[in-house]
Length: 75
Image (cartoon, rainbow, N blue to C red; front, side, top):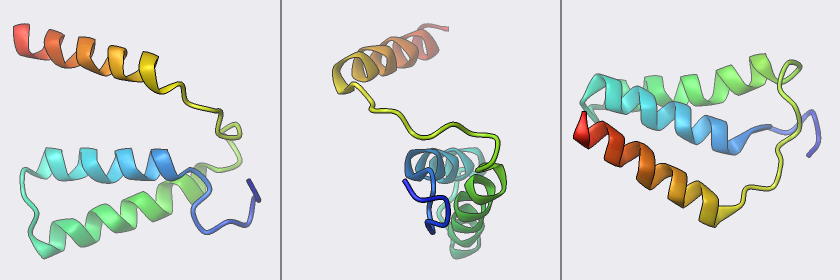
């Protein structure tokens, strides 16, 4: 991926936006705007420190996600 790309780490940006909205427990316009700003700004600021995006293996990622969600529910 090019270093001057508008969104150098799209998965990170999406996770940051979702996490921010979950922490705010709201989807009001101000929270959507702040989530979008965080999702755009942080990956750009941290681009020099983050390695290039690797290929994500969907099946192990889904298994891990299911396990983490189950652990959260149980705890």
